[in-house]
Length: 193
Image 1: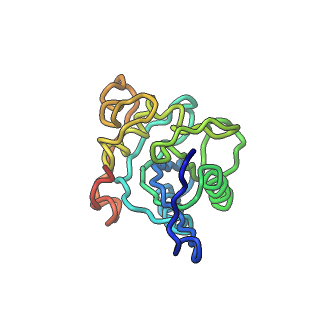
Image 2 (image 1 turned 30 degrees about the horizontal axis):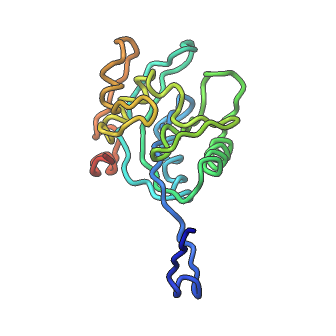
Image 3 (image 1 turned 135 degrees about the vertical axis):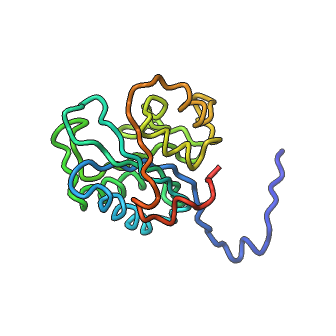
């Protein structure tokens, strides 16, 4: 027989405390004012939680569909009380509000926001896979993520972000922009891991 213990005051005054999860996001833009698009998206993320740390901006060569303008990318850590599906829907809504139209797969976009990692969670659901299934193959994701969380462990591959980045073959051009070009304060916050 199992014993059940409870704290009497918790029964009289139940209070649900939302749990804040640490989510790693990748943002990119290659249409219009790329920097302004990223800054607008980052500011809008405040409605979904707290941006804890953000990487510098990186100018990146397009991959897969290469006949398009270069991207500006960054990575950040968002602390949120949202669950994975809720966060995905909120991010898709934000992309739509910012003018994202999904007309050409891997094509130009005003804003693209991907969930890379959701704490240590592994999610396999219709339309949602976490960790991001291509995370370990993309230099444009791993360079900014390694800046803010080099020791973060991929929950499936059991390698750090730094190890994943260092294992990539050479190829895609990824250039970190200088702070004077970005005008950002957040890139100097402490690392996430």
